[in-house]
Length: 295
Image (cartoon, rainbow, N blue to C red; front, side, top):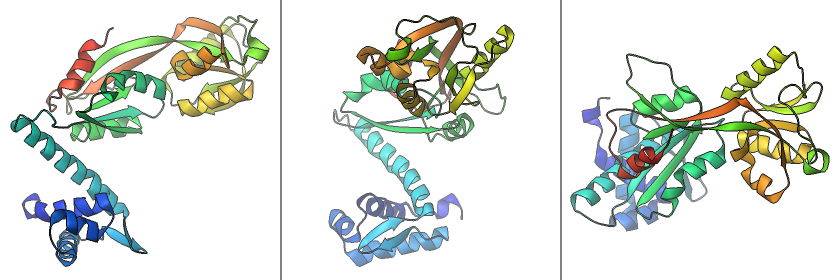
């Protein structure tokens, strides 16, 4: 099937049904009959050669293919709405900003970065997480507007990317106040044999920490390694083990006193980057966020 064979009228009807999960409601919204909507979707399925919905009782549920098509339709018609709003000079036009972030990044850091947008009624956010390479592939295909990462991407002449440094923060050693409140440990010299939870091997700062320990001849007792920072935060809070992670991950626990900082090393830090494409669709809110970032 070629692009010029894709009927966007069919796709629009499918998009409305996918959003509402019900043929009758979609037909009412589109001011047409249920049978007309059903016919449009059936013709789209025939063109695509795949089933887009399955039935669960009276409700239509997207198949795996349907979910994929729905995500693209959301982008297509969301951008269409945004375009019309801008062309017609409407102040209530909605801008869609699609942000990807690597799964190993702190959710608190991401929230802090997008916080200026949360109070803006003209912005609709789409937030995705995943592996860096997959997110960059979606960025290059213009399915994302920006990717937040804690590592840079390798130079590739076949895909032009801009990698903007957003800032960095020290990595801290944290523990429960009942056991560690009165302690100040050197990192890594004082960690020999201590129970520790660490970021998983895929995390950018894990290699830094392991290299420090090897160079100092120190071997902590590894009790857990966790890729997801939200899960590592829970482990830090509830296990009683020492944990190496950025303080932004546990900023709420540190303020509340449920965790305390036990040590830091100037040789351990996490860097943050915003990755974009040079020919991206310009979104003023994104440009403002990138412009306000400081090295």
